[in-house]
Image 1: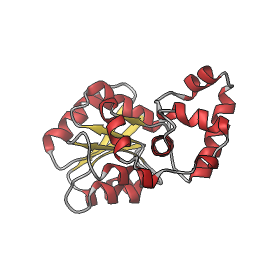
Image 2: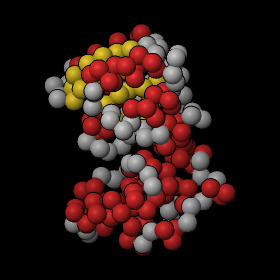
Image 3: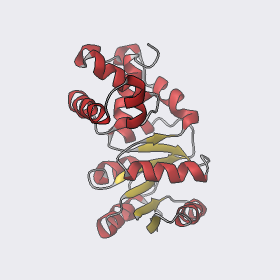
Length: 208
């Protein structure tokens, strides 16, 4: 059973998310709160697997909450806007996904499950726009940090493929893909697949 905390200052959003998630046989909502300080307190009390956090909340905003809890709880950031200047910071602080509030029930459930499994999900309609927004020439990373094969794996991560799909696409074993990803995370000093994808876009790998 995946335990979830919902933190959003809009009661209708919290109620809606709770209704969607609690219809799933493998998900339970352990708490819903209206501000960032309560979110941190609730995480310490309930130790949920996943926290759904709005970016703009009273007390502590979603960025600060993410920084405080991402070491113990997977975070999916939820925002009203399809491109928020704060989203990149949230992901760098350890968030495991990014959704817009109008993403739909199926994507919400998928994002929670992906985060719980250690994967990441970003709303498809904003992935390219968001990552390209942060792909400025001055920020372009050094490709030489990674081997050619690691670059191949990273490229597929940025395209949204799962480990199994990457293995099939690149004719690698699943264990080899996992080994490459572990090496990449260490070399790039990123926490998760979102960090890897962001690096790939900034490096220009996705269009190569």
